[in-house]
Each structure stands twice: as structure tokens, then as C-alpha cells.
Picture (cartoon, chains in turn green, red):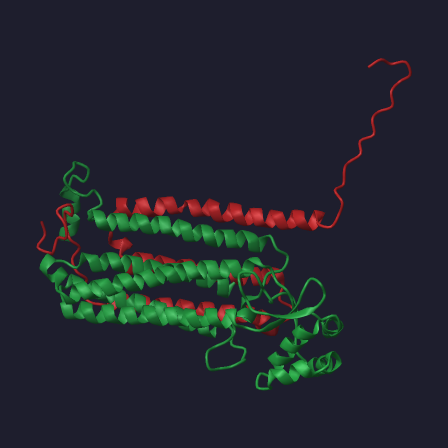
Length: 291
Length: 145
């Protein structure tokens, strides 16, 4: 209740003190985060504009459906839920570090900062796996010239269009050049030596692929990859810089810099940045994976 | 001056440190609970509403709207409790929240624009431009321009 009394007696705008009752650094951190929110907002809204302007958009549940160690099992949302929970958990350890800072408990701040750093690194590792999985993926897509090809998901290629009927795929196989037939056949038989496939005739390869009962898609909207890698990359870069800031804060805590200063406000400011990263992920998760 | 730690000479009073971590954990469970609901709804969308062929476009849109609202709730709790914006004084809160109202226009206008592009493209794509032919009114005999 003493704070309420203080608020009533104070002339906020008469100078000499912060009218927001916050230090310059903290207020500026808030304004930086607000401007950053507009940057992310602009990216996500531009993604929304392009998505709304297309008749077909790639179904995220088909693209993001794998989990490390589970091979080709269809597990939509599973891996990204793990990433989301890692980030929520690291947000909690961050707020607990701030809490220990208020109590001037150096040991507590150290421990929770360490946990936050580990959470951040875990999140980045998950993202690295996800990107690698997409960039090295092999998906059969029908190109505009009517032939089939094996494509990864990149900023220039999107093999996630609408599925083509089986007959259309068989017709497309007839116009597909031999090197692409070999690529397609090798996605079916990973363990089979590819030099054997290269020696096979077109007819043999087509028969082999037709018998395998594989699916092929049209190519999807090109913008998908650019927006996905652009926005998750920009977010990942924020996480990376957040981890670096947290490591610096951890070292400074360890060296008793904040104890000597008499307050742990730097932990609060680093915490604001870290929570913002979590906040942005809420919307990246919403726009790219959920809807 | 209060007896609590004061971080800088600009700060008039320090917030009393929270008694315990109860509120933090409560919000953690709340955020996790909301995320689980989102995942259940999202998984429903992934399986085209659990394989129900009767699901209409409007129903799907409704579920997506619910997920969006749940995400905004998460954002509110993160900003208000984890970032302690709810504990700041009102003027400070307003300088952050009021500019963010720009997003209302930002989202509406740009999604509207995207939708308009789709409509126009579907109307005109692959068709030759149709020029309206206006037949000039027949001139009367002997009339001068």
C-alpha cells in the first residue's frame, strides 16, 4: 500500500525523476521491443497478404509432420509443440531469475540464467534440425513442363502443391528424363545402390516407380519457403542474440557485477528481450503451423 | 524513498518484491493449458476436422478464429505477467499499448488487400482484357459537330 501512497503524493511531470517510474534503459528497452513488434508484425502480415491472395496454399501439416527418430511417421504439430514448450519453459526460468534478482540472491539468479540459456540452445538446435530436414528433403513434384522431379523445400522450390491423381502421375513419368527417374527411384530405395538404378532403362525405372505406389504433388506457391525461412530465421536470430545476451548476463552475475551495483536490473532488461522472443514465437507458431 | 532497492535516481519508488513464485507458476500452467487446447484444435484442422467431410469452410474459419483469440490471450499473459508490464504505472502502459492499436488497421487492410488480389486475379487471369464497346449515338443527318 505504500506504493499507492507514493503515487498520489508524487508530482510525476515536475522533472528530476522518470514520469514512468522506470529507468531510462528499461523504458528504452520497451520502446525497442515495440518497434521490433512492428517489424515482426509487418513480416507476418505480408505473409498473410500473399497467403490470402492465393487460391491454394501449402498445408503446414503436410510439411511439418516429422519428428527426429520417427522416420516417415505422420506426426503433424508434434515437433513444433516440443519447441513451443521449450520456449515457454525457458521463459519461466527467466522470470524466476528476475525474481531471484529482486531478492538479491546471486546463486538463484545464476542457476535460473543457466537453465534459460540451456532452453535457448535447445530451441535453436530444434530449429537447426527442422531447417535441415526441409532443405534436404526429397519430395516428388510435377514441374510446369509436365515432367516429374525430386525437390527439397527451399526459398525457391516448394514441392507442396495439391496432390496429383495417380493416372496423371503415370502420364508425367513418360515425359520425365532418365536422370530424374533415377532420382525418383532412389527416394523409394534408399538402401539400393544408385549406380544400379542408373544402368536401368527408362521403361524399367517407370515400371518400378509405378509399382511403388508413391504420391506426387504439383509445385506449391514459391513464396511459402521465402516467408517460412525468412521469418523463422529472423526469429531464430533473435533467439541466438538473446542467448548471447543471457550468457553475458550470466558471466556478469558470476563476477558479482550486479551484486556490487546493488541491483539486478540488467537481468530484468535481458528478461524483457527474452520474453519478447517467446511472445513472437506465439505468433510465428500461430501463423505458420497452427492455421 | 522506500526501503526497497532503488535502481536509479530517476526511479521514485521500487516495486515491492513479489512474495512468492506462485503467480509465475500459475501463469506457466495457464500458458501450457492454452497451448494444449490450441494443439488439439490445430490437430483437428490437420485431419480436416478429424476426418469429417461435412465440415464447411466457415466452420474451419471459426476454429482458426478461436485459435487466434487463444494466441492473443497467451500474448496478454506473457506481456502482463512475465514482462511485468501490468505492474508498471498507467502512463507507461499506455505509451506501449496505444501505438500497438495500429495493428488493427494494419491486419485488416492488408488481409483485405490480399483477398482483393485473389478476386481480381481469378476474374481476369487467362482472359483477354475485355474492353467495353460503347456504341456512339447515331448522328442526326445534317447535324454539325
